[in-house]
Amino acid sequence: MRTLEGRTVFITGASRGIGRAIALRCARDGANVVIAAKTAEPHPRLAGTIHSVAEEVRAAGGRALAVRCDIRDEAAVVWAVEQALAAFGGIDVLVNNASAIGLTGTLATSMARYDLMQAVNARGTFLCSRTCLPHLKKAANAHVLTLSPPPDLDPRWFQDHLAYTLSKFGMSLCTLGMAAEFAADGVAFNSLWPRTTIATAAVEVFFPQALAGSRRPEIVAEAAHAVLVRDSRTCTGRFFIDEDVLREEGVTDFSGYALAPGAPPTPDLFTK
Image (cartoon, rainbow, N blue to C red; front, side, top):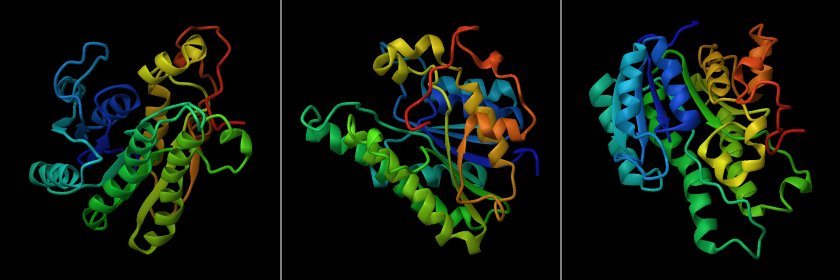
């Protein structure tokens, strides 16, 4: 199964950045794409809304459903899933892309920011996965793909931004645990993380010095697609790096993904 044609892909945080790129890649196959995100009206500083991405999905060849959803709100997630079922009849793929970031040390991290990152990242991944699972279990090749790094207890990933690392590794532990828990049901749980920084709003704000060495979100989208078309019963419990996935697919030249051609790539967090 090398295509997502006719399959329903529910993507959180899909109004911009990596989520949008994954939505458009799925659309090129003719997938049904659920764009679940908070931004329904144009933002003064950030490009993209659920409605603008829905238009792009349709133009790319897919079917689209724009659903305003804050994944911190259980009722909102349940409602969004119900809308997806009403529109497309089922859910084949969940992409846990929505994430909150705060790269501050312990004393500089407010509890409000700590709670936000935990609620969106670890709790949101658990909630969205839990809510979609009864429907994923009915799908022929069900996948949950979470944008989170390989678990690693090296202190260097914790010492400068403990709260953020806890929340991102919480997402990864959802992959680890649910892959084992639902293996017999044929629902794959995998994580995907970029080798380099990706040119997104988060990088512009938190890593402006890394922007020149960043790659475009399309590299993550292509890697995500390559994972999502694999057999869910044999490809599960994995922690993929985008570049490695594409190398497995025969890609050897990544220069086309560079934001600034010729600039040395900037390694992302949690990559060695």
